[in-house]
View 1 (cartoon, rainbow, N blue to C red):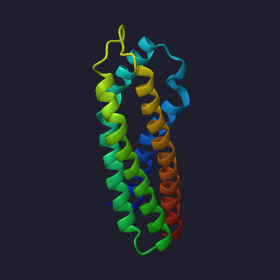
View 2 (view 1 turned 180 degrees about the horizontal axis):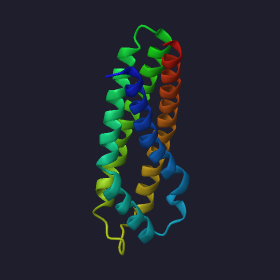
View 3 (view 1 turned 120 degrees about the vertical axis):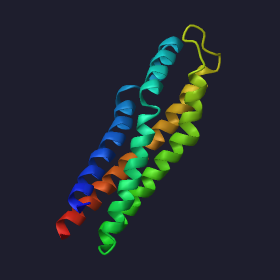
Length: 154
């Protein structure tokens, strides 16, 4: 595959995945929601995003690895792309082992009768979401820089 096309696809998917987590962080802080509203919003988001975002994230990681391999002769671009890949892997691990287990619990709740400890679980999910968003934005920044450096050197 042409390096420019690969780089474009890598940037596009990385921006879509991290942009989604950033948008959730920016506009959906659940702290002021009632229990019922939180459960309904979260269940809707989980249903809409819980399969497609991890798949797009995995594809982003694969494209970032491929971009790094193609840029291996340029130490600066290679290092930036490896750093981006590391960030994206950390985001994936946070999602898989912190956010998704909470998602599974929330999907079993009734919006009309959430459990007494719903706010503690909400806050734990939000903490992990904030962490993965920050790491994801760092990864996207490294990806952009790595692709720009690679493009400038061609």
